[in-house]
Length: 375
Image (cartoon, rainbow, N blue to C red):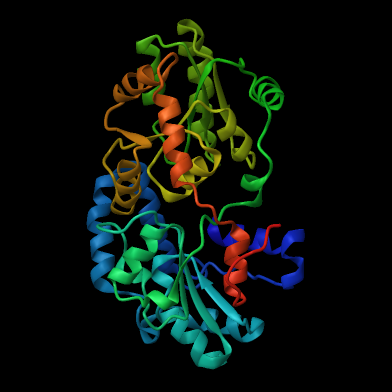
């Protein structure tokens, strides 16, 4: 997501003076089948047994599979890419790409001819913040928020080689906010729902991990005055389950539910949502912070290690609760429905966390400038 966002920003009019050309390379998926298998294991764990990831995460922390360029499988594919493209800057947006892959790039291009940079979107340090994020020999570590950079310096990164860059999100999240008329129009025309009704968005990760039906059943039993948007990603089965629930149970209990496949309009959706329910991933959490949209963390099945850092950030700043069982969802939502001031308190906390920086600041850091002049 962050790599795609970086490329999208490089193609905007604002970035035209920098004359950047960005090529994407999924170094794990595109180098060797073993790494693709590892990614599929991660996705299976997130979908079925989140607590198991504590074993998976700590094994990877110990094995250090990508810290030495000599043991990287399929490295010739990465080398061929680097030789063909000959980049001036290589940006890693993944914890396991900051050592051996940087070393390979420098071997091919020469250490003085390529700038190796890490962008880390984690929101806090501590357990779950992989030690592999930090390569003290890298040229620059960019963290989303100050806590990210603090975590990096705790692991040995020099302060003079760290910089806070803010969120690296799609340009859509930085468009002017919708006015009240536009929000009402989006709710009615795009979602088929009622403006002014408490709207719960059930989110899903990139691999469509979700607990939509269990959460919908909990809402149905609670008889709350809410309507629901269920994001289903690219999972046809998840969309079918949601639509079947809406036609059957939803109609009987009076809860309007709209199931949505993959969409590029999250910016608008999160602006009209009363609350988003999502796994504690940094991607969706950053998007909600940017949109000032209250969020509840879906902790069903346990919290994965890298989600710990997000929960820690939320608890530190007071902007999200954690759902441990489906029945926690209606209980927490009941406290948020007007005339409660809980939603506004969450929004105020989100405004405090939201970075003042802009993705263009990150592009300027990559080319050696400090900040983006937005005057």
